[in-house]
Length: 87
Image (cartoon, rainbow, N blue to C red; front, side, top):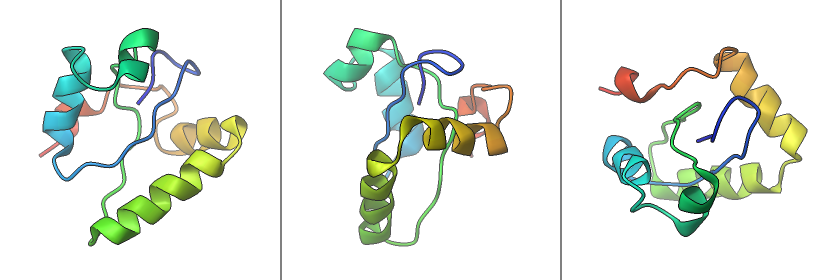
C-alpha cells in the first residue's frame, strides 16, 4: 500500500485483502498507515499458504526502498488504486 505515487509504503499480510484495505482506508488499520495516510492498494500477491506469504513479506521488508518502488512500477506504473479490482 502507498500514501501516493512513490510516497510512503506499507507491506503486510492478510487472509482477507479487501477487508484489510477497507480497515486502512477507515483509519482503523495500523498506526503507521494512519500516521502517513497510507490508503492506496498498489500491489498485491496471492500465496497458497500463510507460511509462503509471511516469508515473502519478510523478504520484501528487507528490500531497499528503490527495489520496492520498482516492483510496484513493473505491475502498476501509474500507481493506480487496485482495490476495485479485488474479486
